[in-house]
Image (cartoon, rainbow, N blue to C red; front, side):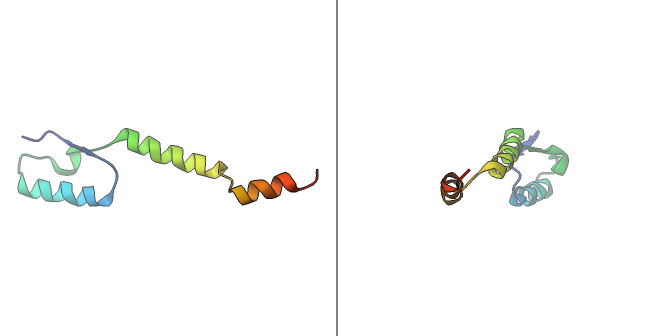
Length: 67
């Protein structure tokens, strides 16, 4: 018996859950698909950090400019 499947948010996992539901009648399908919360938090954190990333070239240029 499979209670749930926990995996990241990749679209291929949606297909896996659909196929698993077709093969195992007792499996709940999409209602039993648990997306990993920490993976979601990681994606959000990376997205936020990326907003503040400055390339070395941009940093050097900003430091070389007179005030």
